[in-house]
Image 1 (cartoon, rainbow, N blue to C red):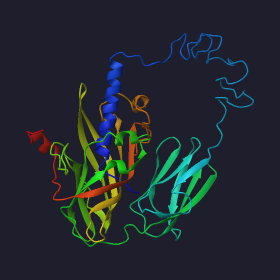
Image 2: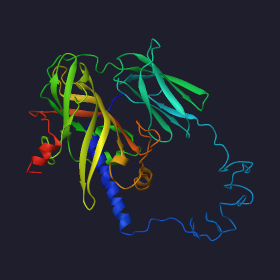
Image 3: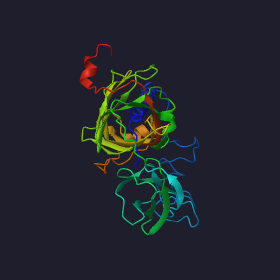
Image 4: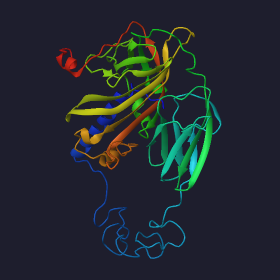
Amino acid sequence: MVRRFTETLPMLRRLILLLALSFAFILAGCPTGGGSLGDDDDSGADDDDDATPPNDDDTADDDDTADDDDTADDDDIADDDDATPPPADLLSTDPVDTAADVYIGAALSATFSGATVATITLADDAGVDVPGTNTWLNLTTLAFNPTGLLDNEITYTATVAYNAADTESWSFTTSTVGSTPFGEDLVGKTFAFDITSGTVLSPEGGEQFLGQLNTALLMGVTAQTATDISFVGGLAAEGTEPPEQDFCTPSVDFSQNGPAVWNDPNFAAGPADVPQSFDIPNFGAFDLTFRDMEVTGTFDSSTGTEVDSIVGASVYTYVDLTQANLGLPCAQAAAFVPGLVCQPCPLNPSSEECIVIWTVGVEADLVPNLSMVPWTQEDVDANTGC
């Protein structure tokens, strides 16, 4: 599945800033709504959810005829909170059935009408299963993340099993993008990403973060062989045009677990853990680690000869908020940040304290005369200009 590194760091920075503003709002004593024992829902004395009769929600048949909240399924018709919900329907898939010219790193997903248990699998035209990972983007959208990139000009079949007994399949054919190697030495080349050109698959509603980003995001090639390629990523110094590397933030070494997979012109870098520190006014510094970040993309050329862009770039990673020292569980943070979805942590599914970040379809342009320099947190601390 295509993923992209470079927009992830500032997007989380915006998320944390939004959280901080919300906390400040609460600490300032501003009203947050909610109920009381006598009047918690709609200011009506006879329609609350507390323990005061006549219409409370903690006795047996308190709404008289319909729509009660007890343990019996006595609504008889519909809208009973205790009845078993209807099975979910499959509403849509991405790509759609019989789609053509699908990029080899495109996201696969299935969206349902309600919560369900589901799994997506993928097979090539010979029926061979494609390895990958299922991830819930929200309560009703399941995504499948293939390991690495798909092959060009192949018809794949995706199958989703849901509701314990239902299955549906759809097919799509990949495009020729990335099928022609350039054979170019890319060492020293750096690319700046246009974050607004991409689509945020997770967290839900994450598009609001992209529009607020005003810092260029950089990714540079530092080493290359016939089979391997290495990258250093980082932020651009604010206000620089053309972009220059920001030496007040650490770079990201995507070779920390080995060189990226390289099949000219396609690459798959990571996984890599990316530690970052954010200084939030009135709250101090917060340390976050973007776990198992993986990036894939395709080098491209506007002239057909020399590489001058990256297409289809995207990133997949996650953040464990229990390690951020926010003093607030993810579920409470989600109440103040619209669209934030708390998900089970990949290494600890019993803990729903993680935010999955997945963006796809971002394009990047070559930055002339810029080579990325590996830069550690120690280098940042020693930089008197920061």
